[in-house]
Length: 71
Image (tube, rainbow, N blue to C red):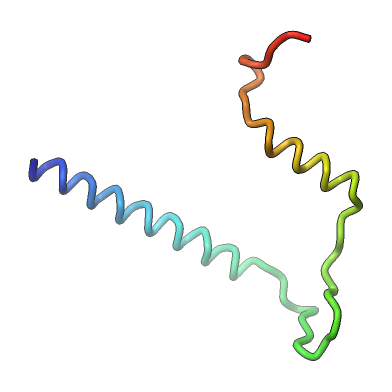
């Protein structure tokens, strides 16, 4: 029982550090050189609707290629 609890704590710690490092990497790597806090509009690039639709469809379809049904 003690070994199982130790394993669970180790997994929780590893998961915490993994998430923390991912967030830290995103914060550091995001380009903020054009950021203007006084701007009244969003200066980020917007994708056209057809591209965002494809991205949404792709993210919904997470089944492996080998398990897809034949058409």
